[in-house]
Amino acid sequence: MNKVAIYVLILLIYLGLAKSFSTNELGLAYIKNVNSLSQIVEGTNLTAILTDTHSTGFLIKTYYQKYKIVYGLDTPKEIIVRTSRKFATENLTNIGLSLFRRYNKDELENTTPLPPGVIFIGDPAFGRWKYAPSGRKVWHFFKAYRNLPKDLGWDEFKPSKKFLELAQSHIGQNKAFYGENLEFGSKGYISQKSFPDYFERLNRPQKSFQDIILEYLKNNF
Image (tube, rainbow, N blue to C red; front, top):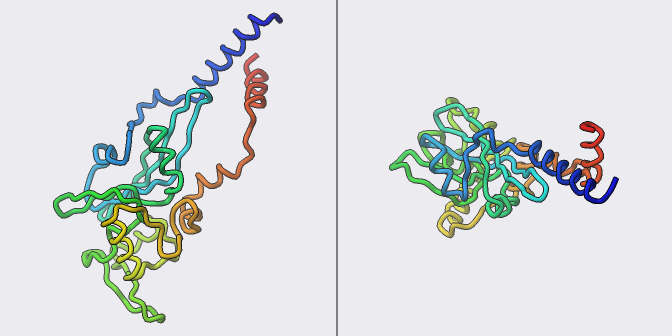
């Protein structure tokens, strides 16, 4: 096989792979940054949790993010969006964090990266503070909202009054907050346990470009 034929074959393989790994035709919404979430997430009393992120393509990559939208008064839902390389890269450390919240009062919005559920903590409509055996005040949801801790991916976590105060301080500084002991985010054990898809994919053996080409040739020629 001469060089021209080899180059043509490689080009055809590349185009075929690019087509195979492209999902633009699915009509997914595109967000350039966190502010774009305001335009595609409907409702109030909600928190949008970044649960997964990945990219497809080789030379030309397309970036995706998955969000879990947890409502105070409605059933949670998941959305997948396309996004910019910059925004996807900036949030690689924020898997498991809430990147967007919309409050009920005046539909106020906030985009500071925080542990999920901060929007509900301290709101007397959803629960109340109780003293733990340690003497610390911890948040308890009312029975009507007993599913919220599971929906939020808290596992056995019980937020304290100090946790809320720290979160509010970070909101004031517009600075990401990962919990009192870094329990949340891509390095946090709670987020890793509650939203495992991204972390399991990181631990899978990665195929080399050569392996992918050989597999493609085997299946298509």
